[in-house]
Image (tube, rainbow, N blue to C red; front, side):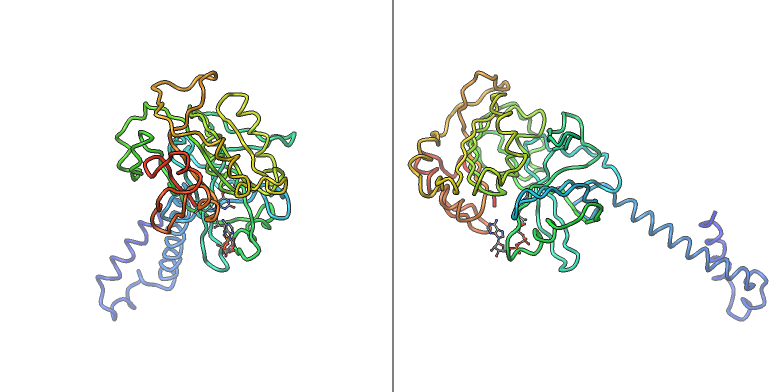
Length: 347
Ligand SMILES: Cc1cc2nc3c(=O)[nH]c(=O)nc-3n(C[C@H](O)[C@H](O)[C@H](O)COP(=O)(O)OP(=O)(O)OC[C@H]3O[C@@H](n4cnc5c(N)ncnc54)[C@H](O)[C@@H]3O)c2cc1C
């Protein structure tokens, strides 16, 4: 109705010369006011249409999410639950199927910078326990983040302090890594190149992580429906850094999906100081692949290694990673026969 009136008004206005416009009753004060109001209403409609169309998470624009829970684990670590203001219809967990590791970018509005964070498919029950989302459930787009703040780090410090109810803006998903079709075909395809391929081959993964580098591996382990087994070597200051995430390691070990080794520096187990112990745990890369999901009793034989953590950790475990390139595989992994063909460094 408003649109029709506005177009009628505009057409009539354009047809008349300026002198005749004033004598024409169609351009009376009442009609002019109506035209003005219609224009404002139309602008409003367009604004709300644009605002509401930015509901589904996208790389191209920011979508509003609310902090629904802020769980402080210790002085440095926090877990945040984020819920979209409007429920998301796309189930990103199903879309990525844990073949892709993905993150979102959160905007710090005061300094206008964005940082990447890794969503985890978790929900907190009323009794305080955490469970992974079931297959097919996207919880309306709600997810959790595991955060570490650094003394000089603006964004993580700001995020960790956000109260429940605070609205923030984020965009994504950004695909940080896509597992190769075959473990030794480490060509790291772009997502578009790989959509045509079918993933029938299952191979085990060796994951070496430190600090919040655990987040992408937790994303992989917690995403429902993934058949791969993971051997995880995780380094942290203390296991309490992990908060409720720690309980999942036990559960996953019971299902046979995970073999977990913890290196706690406060317990004298800094991986840099006990390299010979770490070397004993790191297997040689295996040529094993299966065409069926692993069974509980199958032994773990990793044929692909993922290394996630701060740069000095990556250097110790797998050699220096340069900004735009992976760099050669050195460090502990190379001593056990791993190479550029089957290792990916994520930082
Ligand atoms: C794909 C991807 C996924 C990520 N997922 C997560 C996640 O799930 N949880 C999470 O907490 N972070 C994650 N990060 C890191 C995050 O994006 C930020 O880099 C981090 O929060 C620091 O940002 P900042 O603005 O607070 O600090 P910055 O301003 O970037 O850094 C300030 C100072 O903090 C210190 N610092 C920053 N990062 C590190 C580090 N990794 N190790 C040691 N010191 C550091 C350095 O002294 C640095 O000079 C991810 C990064 C990427 C690329």
